[in-house]
Image (cartoon, rainbow over all chains, first blue to last red):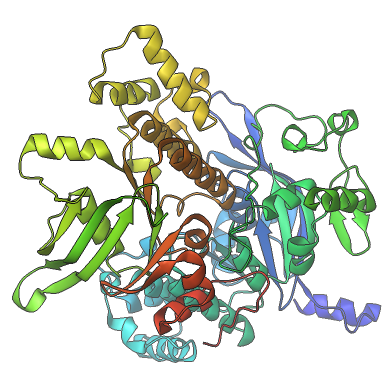
Length: 351
Length: 267
């Protein structure tokens, strides 16, 4: 990370934010029983800056979770790595061995919270034991008393009661367990935290508490930046600074959360926004628009735009050749049509 | 909606679990009237007693006190024949589509069972036609699915298959206990549209049990807000959501992230 700062200083970019994570053309695939390769992440590139929250949106089966597993170097069959690089703080983690990855990167540089994180807690162990376990591996110089002090202090700062440390997992409610797991997994101050649907199993009140905790972690600099994956768009709108929309293993659009929600460019993003349900005036009269069909089967090689089969504006040109990313001002999207025409179409729809 | 007949109603229904020190009141003194063709939502956070109430309505749990009236008569579930008759009129969709089906049966058999349950004696072609109808109602292709096992389908597809079964059984009341909480936002709108279509087709009463205030507002005519086993507020959806009176309702609505309003994390 130090070299990174130096480089920045040298190039004279003083106000540019530091990049904490850079992914270049990442490709990962699942191997089926018939030895076919199914590319669930197909040529994904993006950067993540310090102090930022990057949201990833998309339907189920679009590769969101596979992407998050790939980012951590979690390649267990049937998931395999094909090509591309993942650079965290100057090191390409794909060049490291399994053991190095576990010791140097996981937990320290990159931490992960899965959807049912609370199920990860062994019901026969007290919460403090999980923290001791992490410390034994990563900070062996600390003794038990110091670990407890450190943990209690951290829990206190995050508005969690230190009493939780001596509780068994089954004594805690679902939301509390989820928050505890988040506190445990960020105890080594990782650079990037990947939260994969951390609130889907919780009700709105616990969801708010979890989001508050995540924002708190960012504000108090315990984590540098966050990747937040969810299909719940109103939530993503409030949590993320930038949103990437994923479809069939590709990033189809990236923009600020305001742009994505109120001014989408890619037809898929536009359709996705049609499924938002919020308790606001006018919601009742609004017609929910579901996207017809399902995401394509990636076993077959798709020529042209992957969304073509479900897009209402599809033309013959969409089905030919590779669709390249297109830039419009500060935004990137993957469609053949220019932004002006797209906006005109969407305006017509509303009429 | 108000002029329609009252189909299911409860008077001071209470459910208590445990005895002595461990006594826990899950549902306390609730009264309600559900009308024919009405969509009702029962909204509350986890542990507020929503699912207990749903189970009481389904007849899976017995209420500790109070009574439940079905079509104006006290509900009788003592004898097996009574229960069978009641369950012909009331059906449910549960939260977890992955555990709603028998994994050893193929989709064809699952749908065929719906016809057998009703005791219909119909020809082979007619049966096939009924199953195809039900599948096309929920935008599934029977030809592609009939030879598959439930675990080969996605969550959204399974939940839709569940709706196809309900379509074949045409019950009077449907209890949907968090039907969309385990599927993504896109399939959610498909499922909701189908349930609304089902209501229009069969004039069915749908009771949504959910913690998603936005969803409850979108689908329902009447909303009941539940806190710690009691109904704290009820009324037409517009009134309850846009002009909440009870502090708990206000809290619940402020907890939901919205698009056009600021989401205040401080409260």
